[in-house]
Structure formats: C-alpha cells, structure tokens
Image (tube, rainbow, N blue to C red; front, side):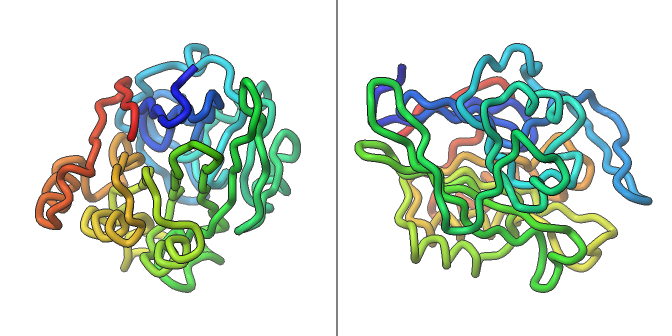
Length: 260
C-alpha cells in the first residue's frame, strides 16, 4: 500500500493511467486496442501507438474514471471489455444511457465515497469538462472530469478532455488548490470542430497548472493519436516559458511517478 500522503500515477498510454491514492486503485479512460484506424461516424481517428501494458496486466482496480464513452480514443473495444470486470465505472449520464451497468452516472459537483484499506474513504467528485470551444457540446458530446480527495491525502484533479480555462477556473474556485493535476492536453483537432482545439493546448495546460495552484502536473492524452497537434516537446517548452518546469512530470509510457 502507498503511504497515506502520496499518489502514484502509472502512464499506460493515451488517456489511460492507473492512479493509486490512499490504497485505492483507479483507472482512467481505458484504451488498450492496437494501433490502426478507428471509425467514428463518417470520420476516423488514427491510433499511432499501442498501450505500454495490456489490460490483463493492469490488475484489479476499485473504480474506473471514464471521462466519456463516445470517442474511441477515450474508450475502445478492449476498454469496454475491461469495464465489464470493473466494480464500478464513474462517468456521465450519457455514458450510462449508452452502456448501462457497471457505469454509474455522477453529475458535476456530486461525489461518491470509495472505502480505503484500513479505514476511511476516498472522495471522488465529478467536475465539469468542455470538450472544445463554447457551444461545442451538442457536437462532441458530454464529458466529465474528477477531483480526488480525502483526509490525509493529496488533492488530485483529473481533467478529462477539457479545452476551457473558464471551466478550470470554476473548478479551482470550488475545489482548489490542488497538489496534483492530471491534465489531458495535446491540442486535439478534428474536422468535427475545425476551428478550435478539443483539448488543452500546451500553453493552456501551463496556465491551468497556475490557475489550479497545482504543485505537480502529469499530462495525459497528448500522444499516440494522429489528431493531436502538440506533443511532449511543446509541453516542456510551454511549462519552461511559464516558469513552471519544476511542476511538470512528463512520463514515458509504462513509467510511473509518486507524488507529491
């Protein structure tokens, strides 16, 4: 079990990570399929690299944190299979409507308590996310983020596919400051919303870190898909230019970090 004041994040690939906090193991956005083309409506997304670990090597988790189900770069076929063996998947009302159990809809600002080994609980609070510019939700669909907190534990924000700093400000105002921010970045762009990124740019990720008061930032979902327009190098540059290099933890797939 981890120490009671640490969080460990294992980067699997894309938006997928294992977050272990207070003895509770969580999996974000399960994606375990191989590289290739993945249809989404009349379009397709291109996956350029597979996960560092297959689903079978993840081991048991206490819950899945699913930002959204409607895009294959956040939940793929192997990820859907994984959900069937998970105790609970926390996600949006839309995901519950489409998948059913074991998805549990968790509206923004509501929370659940997950039991911790040895006593106490980990609170998982759903928070807003905006997957693109203002007004894009009818096109891109509903998305959620999460805040993890508990007595003696670091406070962790998991953004999901959010592109809005106004959303970040609202979350910081209600839940901040944060010890750790897990930020989905990469400035994703697709023809669905051609004029604006669907996730945080590298520059906005650095701004978000400052807004959140986050002492540590672990980026996810900035590589391994063809629709990302920024990468780890641009994150490194943006955080350096913002004077926040010491906060950035850019992990290689399969690597983990223990914070804070």
